[in-house]
Length: 392
Ligand code: SAH
Ligand code: SF4
Image (tube, rainbow, N blue to C red; front, side, top):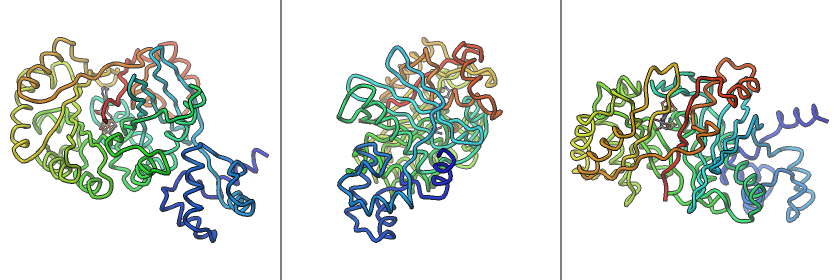
């Protein structure tokens, strides 16, 4: 039975890989009209169905056809960690020893899911444990959307709720989403689709280290909320922290942000800034940021700053800025007219940082043992901040 299911899954189409357009094209091949695809899509995403037999308003003949040619299969859960503050983190197995993570952050007025877009990351930022791990592979559309599909329907059951639990999605887990654009775009469309998760454009945030041409593509194709990981006020420092800056320097990046805003009027760009002791957290850096943003504001850029206390990990050789330093930095930005927030720490007790924990499985073996070791605090005390504060 197990072997049969596996080979069926390997040989047939996973319907989680499709946005509504893709599903409509697939259904057309089966001789089905578009409204059937819509019904099917609603069963999958709104009701969390994974068995065609559940879909009682589809004709039996169609259900049988679907069962032969398709399947609906999410990711395999490696582990789940529940924080005392309600934050939940899942690790998912994506094969070949790669593990990705997804984090749910509940707040009074919203529930945010932080999603991964790649196993590892090729950008190699100095302060990021995913970056240190290197790039393994792009996630498929199905693997990206599975994180939301699974979490939403798990949470409804877990919390005993009928209505939607996840109100916001942030692409701030592992990976650089704009280096996996082809797979990302249909996943974003499923999130926004009224027959899917029905999230508004402003409640879905793509966070990028600054892949300029893809920022322009996103503006045209699907202008969701944009967060840009800036981390430095000038190119010499940013080249060192975010190697992609050598290809797309700050001026080009901020010009792309300004263009993005013409596609998403009345929105602002969130700039993320990871606070590294003695590296990018000095008063002069804050003043340079104010000056930089003034120049671009004159061209129409409106922005908000989000200061992230660095989550240290041994290989980085970097240290988190002390809180007074972070607050002093924030004050200079605010006095300079920049809206600034300091990211709150969530899920500390379960080490729930996007792009942090899964980095520890890079030798691709013994995931479970390492997870157990992590729980016992044997992996160097990585402390984490849950990402994902953006959106309406
Ligand atoms: N690749 C994308 C999205 C994933 S990283 C990007 O870089 O924007 C999500 C956020 O986590 C980014 O702002 C990144 O700078 C931040 N981050 C990465 N490592 C971190 C660390 N060790 N401590 C604090 N924030 C970190
Ligand atoms: Fe990749 Fe983002 Fe980490 Fe940089 S911060 S290495 S872009 S995941």
